[in-house]
Image (cartoon, rainbow, N blue to C red; front, side, top):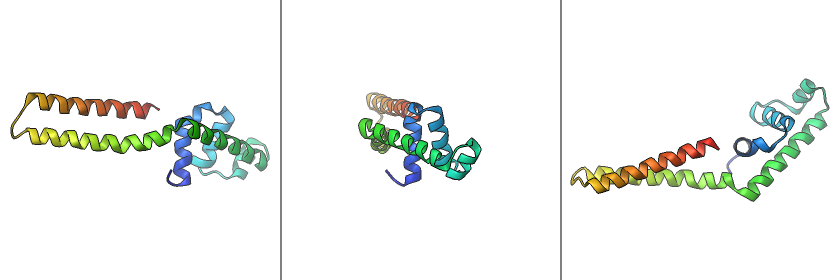
Length: 125
């Protein structure tokens, strides 16, 4: 993965639903909203160490899920591949304009529709 902030955001996006409500909240406040451990602790009426422990457990859970399931890694491989396939289908459609063939156009457009469906599916997760 890229940098730590991006990694944490992706982990929460992909796997955040498995966390407890408090783990999700603390993780989000700390990593996405840039609150300090002290600020979270003060708002929640607990110790800074308590906040740190919750965030560490959440982080361990999210990383373990990614290690086992690899959904983020798969997403990072699929996204550029879909882009390249789409560009190739567009090139086929453009090349087909000179000597138009209905079958070629149909299949290239079908590829583009399937790419769009896969991208929408990716966005749901």
